[in-house]
Length: 158
Image 1: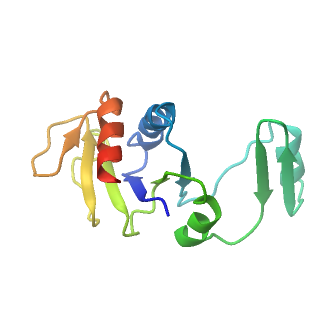
Image 2 (image 1 turned 60 degrees about the horizontal axis):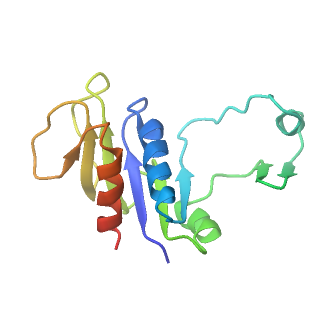
C-alpha cells in the first residue's frame, strides 16, 4: 500500500497553492498519486455547471462521466481517512493529504508569518515550509523550493 504524507497548517497558510506545485512536479516524474483534502468546514459548491445545479437542487447523487474525468457528488457523512484511503490507494505510489493533522501520517507543516509563527502541536512533523526563519532540527524549506520539497517527499516515503 502506498505511503501517506500530509500537508498541514493553519487556514490560509498556502497549503493548496504549494501542494499544487509539488503534485505537478511529482506527477511529472511519473509518480502516481492521489490527493485527499480535508475541509474542516462546509464545502461550498458553486452552481457553475449543470452537474452542480442538479446536486444543489436536491439530487442525492450526481455522477458526471466524460472521456477525461468522472465526478461524483453525494450527500453522506464524513468518511474517515482510512475509508477514503481504501477507495483511492489501489494503483497509487503515494497518497498526499491536505489536512488530517490529527492522523499519525508523516506531516509537512506549512507556515506563513502573517498567519502564525508558532508551530502546530501535532505529531510526526518531518519538515516545515515557511516564509520566515525557524529554529529547530526539522528540515525547513521556503515556498519557492517546490522541487526540493518533492525530492524530500520521495526520499522520505521510500
